[in-house]
Length: 59
Image 1 (cartoon, helix red, strand yellow):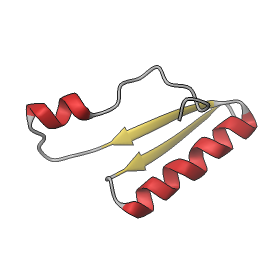
Image 2 (spheres, one colour; image 1 turned 90 degrees about the vertical axis):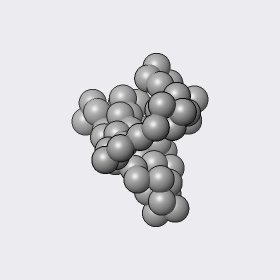
Image 3 (cartoon, helix red, strand yellow; image 1 turned 180 degrees about the vertical axis):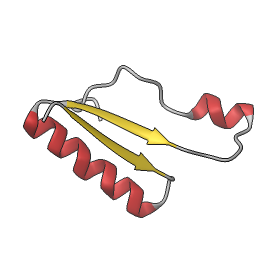
Image 4 (tube, one colour; image 1 turned 135 degrees about the vertical axis):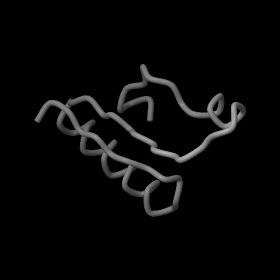
């Protein structure tokens, strides 16, 4: 496995899924992609979203 993708809607369950995916990505030394899908976001909300470049260790 070289990539793991996890989706989030900001809920507590989704946050737990991100934690598990990050641990798995770290254990397997693979890339982790976190995806958020939203209907409409305000400009300020978009600026608060994390940006790429983090490693599993960073998370």
